[in-house]
Image 1 (cartoon, one colour):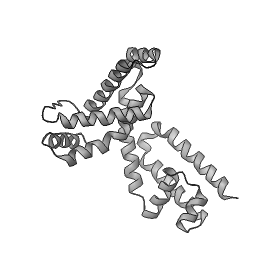
Image 2 (tube, rainbow, N blue to C red):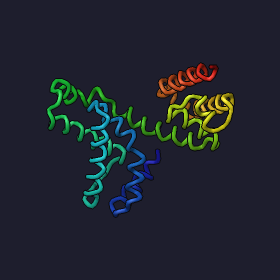
Image 3 (cartoon, helix red, strand yellow):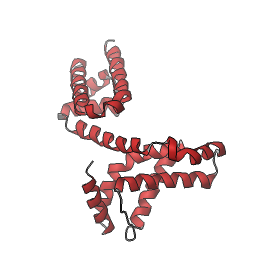
Image 4 (cartoon, rainbow, N blue to C red):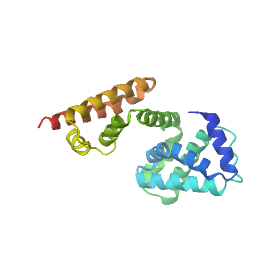
Length: 203
């Protein structure tokens, strides 16, 4: 993650640059929703919190003063919004009390900073795949299509789909090896999906 670029986007945002605002939003939105969901246990409410925070940032851009890391500021703001939401609604009082009491200790903010980088690295790696391989990978990973369904959709053989997915996964593992400790679950799911697809394609 280029912190200098974050800073430049923030300064442009203060000057009313909508493209800079959009760039920051797209860069952090997904990971921040995931972060907010750890507090709220509600994905829709988490998305509303993050969207509301970004709206407030835009509305208050002229008086916004971020002296530390922009990323730290955004995550800290989401955390505060979540805790305020829990206090305001008084939903599930025991759960709310636990979150408010232990938020500083039990939720590791740095872990989610790493997840921001990981998500962006994964997307960058996927985008760098050859066009057909990328299309096959996204159909499997994002749309959940079986290999046979992908083969029919693209008018290619199931063997071609299997080969291209294998090459895509091999490339991602190599490019993302620096995040190996955080990828265990991801690639377990991918491998499981791969095995399931192989089983499906044999019928």
